[in-house]
Amino acid sequence: MYDLLKKLTKNSVFYTFANSIEAFSPFLLAIILTRTLIPDEYGVWVLFIALVTFLRPVVNLTIQDALRMHFYEMDDAQRARFIWSSLCLTTLCTLAVVAVTLAFSGPLSTALSFPAQWLVSVPLAAFLYAVFYFLLAYNQFAHNRRLFLALHVVQTAASLGIISYLVVAGWGWPGVVVGKIAGLSIGCIAGVFWLLKSLKFTDAFKQPPELGRLAKFGMIYLPSGMGLVAIPLTDRLIVTHILGLAENGLYGVAGLFGSAVFVVINGVVHAWMPWLFRSLPDWSVKRRQIMTVSLIFLGLLPVGGLVSYLVSSVFAPVIIGEKFDNAFHLIPWAIAGTVSMGFFFHNQAYLHFKKAILPMSLSSFTCIAANAILSYYGAIHYGLVGVFAATIAAFLIAALISASFIFPKYNSKLANA
Image (tube, rainbow, N blue to C red; front, side, top):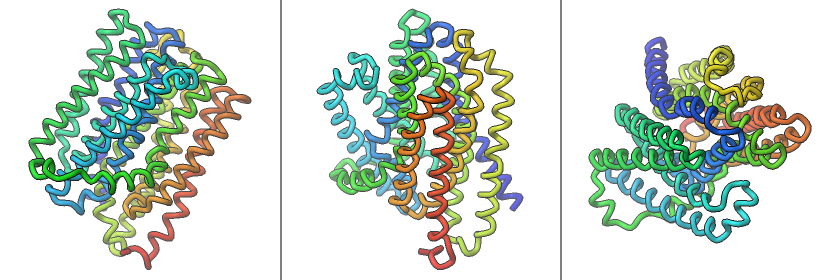
């Protein structure tokens, strides 16, 4: 057991470090942006990221999760065809979203409080993010750790460099958008180049893409894939319309510190899930081992949240400019929301292995709906604190619902189903 925990810890540290390269770039950007942009301008940038994050599962129908589910069931030829089909589906979905965006740019701009002339940049960035995270998922499960790390380094370095140059040159928030799109493009080009060297796509290109099968999976699974992205967008739209763009900027700054906790949680999940998926077929033999690892994971979540809060209380005044001082008291709420999301993440992984798409989607949809309702009334009565509290409650409710689905699927009779 000690050797297993040592190995998982080592892998968790690696993936946490790799993910932190991109995830901590907003902190480096915040040092510049909170001193060069006013809260309203920063609020537009935060809204852009929320819209892109929301659209990412829409333009690729969360196909990277299908890759994870079936990765160890496919040989290299099947993986090549799967990846080729996924890229075709993502491209078609993106073109459809772009068409809708162009056709309804006026109403969408009004509803989203986002400049109409920049709306097309949202699906473009969502497409690039979808491809980038699909490449990360492939390298994670293929155990290409060096390429996983290299992808983060290339994309983050390019994004930070271009964004910093454009913002200092006076481009304002549009410079941040253009720089992010350029950095993502460079990262995706590098990732595709490395992928073409590791897999042979000659036969895959000769076959028609399996669009129907992947689209069917994606449409059923979409609520589950939307769970983690619909909530930030819902919150930001509610904050923007009820409290204003400046408050959205404060929400985004506080959320940076919640994202720092997410980096660690995501790093642990990246190391844990491949091991979990290989171990669960031997549930009857490895049950105690699996449960021990899970309990340690769940126990460390609140501890990690507390440590993150103590660290943030020291570094937040250094990172955040004086114009955003009002975000300080929101940081513990943002961290607590991420910790509660970690409980939900944990439960969904077990359902993910069982390909329990409907239970995953149901619990995610409940999370989205609960958050929307609670955030609306929370914003009206308690401001930004009410919005963060609603997110905490929504994830905890969803975690309980997903837990209720786990037990029937992992009892002794169904363990080997």
